[in-house]
Image 1 (cartoon, rainbow, N blue to C red):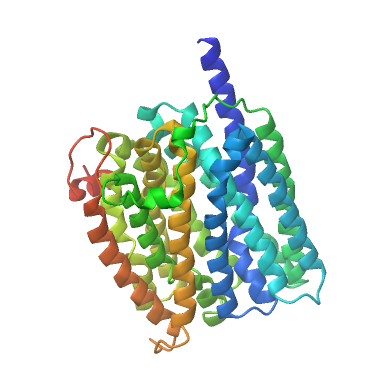
Image 2 (image 1 turned 135 degrees about the vertical axis):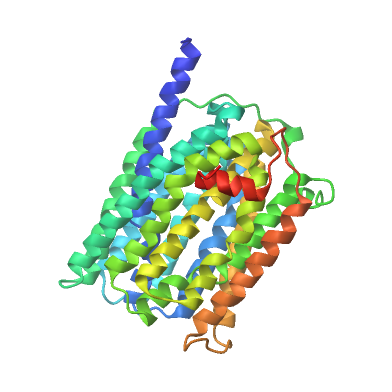
Length: 426
């Protein structure tokens, strides 16, 4: 093994540990923002506002990530600073848990800032990681990485749920205080791991700079712009309903925190368990082929929630949802690496995130507005929203991918055969 290969392997190991601790931080926070807001007295509308802001502001501000990396001459410096700032938002959440007089809005602000700094990391970090992995191995490597780190997210989410469940008979707020404090420690450890990662050199040239408007104007000629709009449209359709699954479970169906965690974590467990297999298929048949298969299948989960709401059935539904989301999430990310040159990757990821994040924010806001006026279905307005989201997901998933092209030479395969391959039948 050459010296360069040895350094690369060392950096990949350190980046893995950095991801490990960030996944721990995510497991102790991400699924519990909405429950804590509800505990503070937040309404379904405030949940929608939080989720909308949580997607819109990070996406908009993330466009400055590429400029920040170019100004600093380093993607790593930007990532490290944002990890530290994200830690400060966790400190603010801890103070909210300690002070019983604060209103729900006082929690929304640090949650949004937590997402802003976390998302600001992505363009530079994705660019850094993609430079460390050979193009033909990205599918299997990132599938393996997502699977392993995903299990960590699932394990810590379950652990957080157990903490909240154990503390629910004592003091619920103290349970959230504990998990937010553990998340802060994990954030500091991820920053320490990142400090020793060597950053591959990247030349910043003026010709690689382009504005967001210049990016959008290339819709007719740019395959990547059309891909970005496809993901944004899917995000809009998904996020019409996504923020309200927690509201339905905790407020309407009266799930306890443990059952709530089980439903969420088994979905994640399936997602991460199948990521590597999706990556193997994507390396062979292409990321776009996988996206064309899974995008329409995203309609299944909300539709089945409308039909039947028994917890055991919902667990199976969410496991199937995790299987589908594994393919969509992995191949959306890897398609960016295939479609964009390294010099433009940081900026393109930032603009992609702006478009897709706007779709998420618009979906959450629209869902929050519609839920007030929709007629109830089986006694719940949220179920009407789920059905509407399901129909839009199916339409967008079938029609929009037709306008996107694969960017590398891959094996031709039908959707039916690919699905059977994933199930291990063929």
